[in-house]
Length: 271
Figure 1 (cartoon, one colour):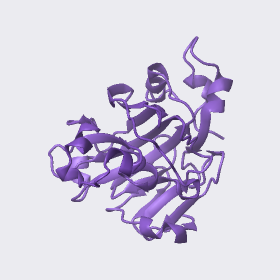
Figure 2 (cartoon, rainbow, N blue to C red):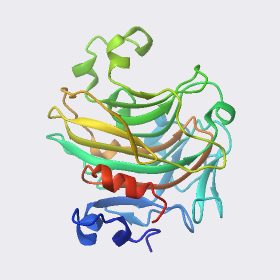
Figure 3 (cartoon, rainbow, N blue to C red):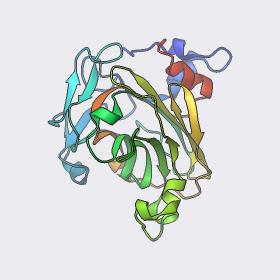
Figure 4 (cartoon, one colour):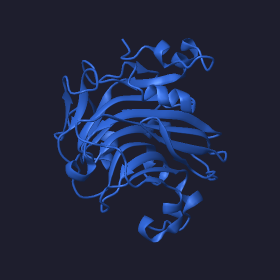
């Protein structure tokens, strides 16, 4: 059974419960285990030693740094990343993510519980990446930066690498990389507090944009993203907790960009 009632998500006059349910393509609440409770594709979690070895991934959660944490979630159970996670922990994106190279549209929603300035180990940390290749190639992600205090929280959206960065210039030497990011320099994360993160995106691959929300509040939107997006669907993954330390709960994917009012409702806790 889904953790939240879809009827509770509806904003009067905006959308019916049936329409919202139809929009949900994937949801992992982690209540009672790691299998997704809603999945148009494979509902199992997978683990591999690294993402370079993703093809050898096996069903189940076997990363030494990650555990299913009974009773540690917002209302039930959660995933706990006990120390810096270097393993590949992911759900397969095929059918669970409504990827469309002619105009990729959707929403990614999840909850985090951590103090990024105390809990994270050195280096960049990406709580979520949705991609078939890498963070800079046909990907949507959020990350915590490695050096700043407080650590900044950023949204990155990048299509074909050769389209936006044909010379493959490293991020720290490429002004075009930072220009693409939405950055919150003092995000509201805290240990013992659940913070809601949502990314809405519309028309990626056809000049579309994306918006970052924290606790239901918009943090900014990207400029129009002009390059194409192409995936090998068999390699597409909802990557969880890349170098992350902390708790994660309620990962949900929708096949459309939710409205600001709908995102606010998701973040309200009245689910």
